[in-house]
Image 1 (cartoon, rainbow, N blue to C red):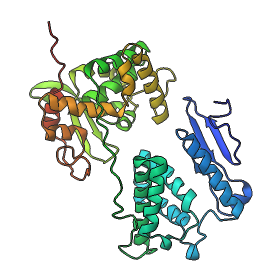
Image 2: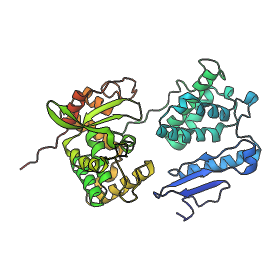
Image 3: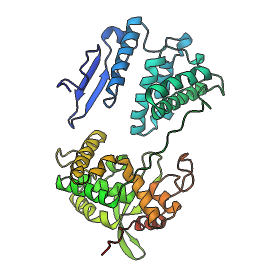
Image 4: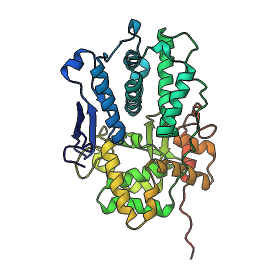
Length: 380
């Protein structure tokens, strides 16, 4: 990797900048003449360097052809124009920021391939052919994500009257299903990760690992948690530390008691934040900044690498596997699917893949699920 950035190939308009946390922002910047034709900056992906190089080169070819960056189809109804209209709509504006970031990457890929094409020209055979090409080059997950994004655009086109009702060419393409990830942590791996974070002096990361595993919540909800989200509540006559939150992905509200093994570190953190309930719960000890996606991922990677020195098997774990671990451990401890689903905040009790069943979270049910997670008894 060069000091100027992870991409060493010289590509016109490609820009790279290192963030304070050590991650890289990569984007394509049009020159003045291209901007006057309607081209705008395009965010690329630092995790997919070859793809980013290809996208920048495609954009330069569009500039060389003299194609405008927006609305070149008859009546202005190009894919570029549709993307611009969708991103200006209420549907897009009300998405979670993390979802928007993911959508932007997918929309950029669509624009690079089809930006000048008229919205009305797309048919099911065209989309199936493109899906098969994407599948061969990128695999099941990426190809499916792109087609689903295109489907959202086509449905938006119908709403705007740019296509006839019921003509979404992405429906029923019979895409290949990717086997769901089923990895979860063992207790000794959980202990190794927590110990590694504490050895590095990162109490915030140790707390995040505990909350993800013992409370079953997503990384985004850990990053956005505030000190004021935690309070003491009487449960069956006993005072319990409780976390109240609105989950970022589906907007479901939850309230759950904190597991005994997470209480100690949380109380310590909350004591330091007691004068500022709006303060972020998790603050990076090295920089003094609240975690964001990039900084969190960097610290998690360093923590896992440190833990792997004594527990090599943790290398297989992604942070999202800790949330799945909660479900596995909760069920193993005797919690029902319904109770576990209340903590996870999705439709895990009925149909977790579709995720279209809302189950209101109740303190009694979440308490049962959290309490079901118990360490296995040690053999003498």
